[in-house]
Length: 483
Length: 100
Image 1: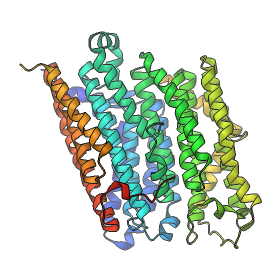
Image 2: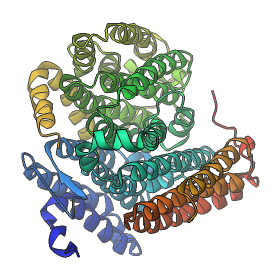
Image 3: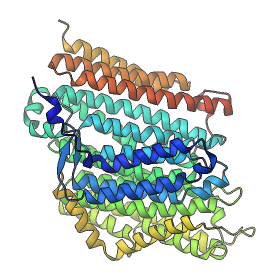
Image 4: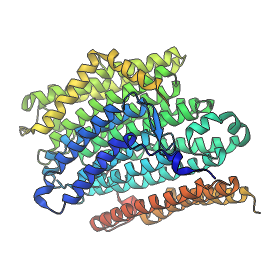
């Protein structure tokens, strides 16, 4: 008889940031019935995120696991905690004005946001497939509601229902994959799988490969890889814009974290994995960029661009060396800042009456709001990968890692794709600066919170662009502790 | 004793029916039911393996999956009701405001 209680090791410092977010969400939920107190919801959520971040900083450099091996605390997980918390904090900052303009500034939103961030952190900080599954669901279910948050908007309804159906469909594939891996290995813990890999592959290899393929399909949906991308443009277009900003960075980062953990740690010895990622990466980059070319809506264009960016990260997954993993983490950090920044400006422009983010609405922006136009240009240059923004170094490190490992053709396809993407990103800059507005544009009011979010994202985009080496050193430390 | 392959075959058939249902059905409720069928097929695989390997982990996992599916159903049905109120249809082809 095994004594489970003494081996469980419930070390609560391992899940301190998650607990803080849970407490913040609970406090907001308690306050919802009192209208006056509910106005503090964003402040409480922001405070929770800051405190959780402080705890997560304290976790850097520790290597431990607890709760019967269900929770793993390593630098890799901690760096992703920081990414999720940063994305959540910035989303809280840029939400208020937009929600007011649409008449949906409800405190429930902040509960959903913090719970979703909690799920992401649980996902990234475990080697156990069961906990990954639960974390994924805790992340996804609030996201479905957030997509449909504008109850009266038909587009928002439609985005929510499409996201829900595709998300649940993907979850079923993922769960089937986990079930088959459980059958092959007799455990759901990746650490056990890695230890006994040869034995498992020799004995029940068929179940193992079936499971790996199904998990890849499941996460292909979540990360938005072609051919599993069809939901992304609709959901990103239909959801309220600050929600789209959050969608395009945080859940994507969480899916990348889990993909790295499962496929480059758990099943690193299966050669088919790299081949499959090669195909996915090439398809995702190319289809994302080509379809983005013909969009006339900025939000939808950014949705296709986010598919293309997932493709660049898949290049790093194909290569799979330490350099590639650190480059992938670097890219996720960089992408979080400049993509959130771009969406923040799109959301701000949508707070004007009747705005729907069509390209024509940007015309003459350099005259009506010169600073916003300048920042938008910075983010577009970062998205297309111009130096000295951090976007350039993100792509540079990934393609360098690819060439070092003899994936030259992949790097060439990636660079060609970057050139294609320049067209549609610079079209935004061109419309802002050189097109004349047909009718005079209304002035845009920039609230202090959104201004702060814009300052943070801009400073990060340019600052990390000037000192990329320091950030890369940091992400390299996250791999050495890849537990 | 029934061999494990029989259970797996049944589960894979159920999973296939579910996936097929999601892809060809145009009614959101039927699509949602098909997804639930897929989840239950996965539960069946878990239980079959758990029994065959003599480890109880799989049984416990099934309970977690059931509660997750219940949470998803709550959110999903609420959203279906909302969209039905606004559009008065549950045919997915009629939800065509968003497309390229």
